[in-house]
Length: 251
Image 1 (cartoon, rainbow, N blue to C red):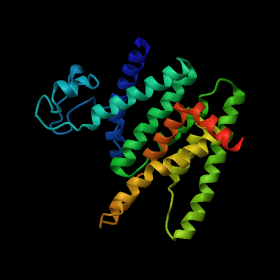
Image 2: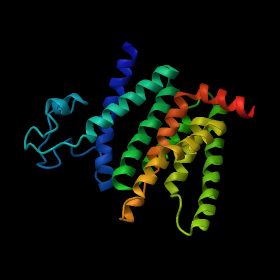
Image 3: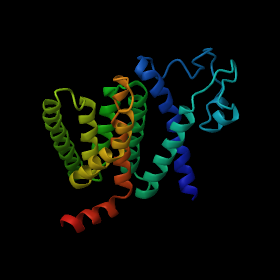
């Protein structure tokens, strides 16, 4: 239990930094300078205003200086980052590989938030998630295998993109989705990666059906990266159970 708490705190601290990335990167702002400040009154925050989760609760979701509302996104990202870190590090143990793996998922969390909020995906974060996923290997041979799986999934998604786009006569998948697929392949391998892609479609389907009810054509666009990331995490967590199930079906 103590380890879980430590891993959660570590993730929440990283999540606090991810909030800065999520806010500043789409605006082409420096993520290191200036230091944390209120985006409404620009007042520099004290260190105790930046304690993950607790500061938002203590301040009741408002700026300590001007009283402007602070988005619930901030504690949510910190909580999710804590849960992701605790889950991965507890499941695989503390090692360089598990830290790199957690880093890849935390990057996917930031990508998901940016995709959801701004419908854009920074290449820098996408490449970082992929690089960390490939590097999360216990040996050079395993690293090469991760790279091979990443290339296979990137190629497969590229073909799927061309075929589906031709059939429906419009862009079906973005280049960012191809990069995320490569990350999924590096993390999960072939069988589990394919299952995760199927799971992501199942998770996204109810949302897509719901937004289709809206009259606004732009509202029909559903960011797919959050579903790919969530499916990848769930598949990794329950990898043994899923793999055994697939083996019982197909051998």
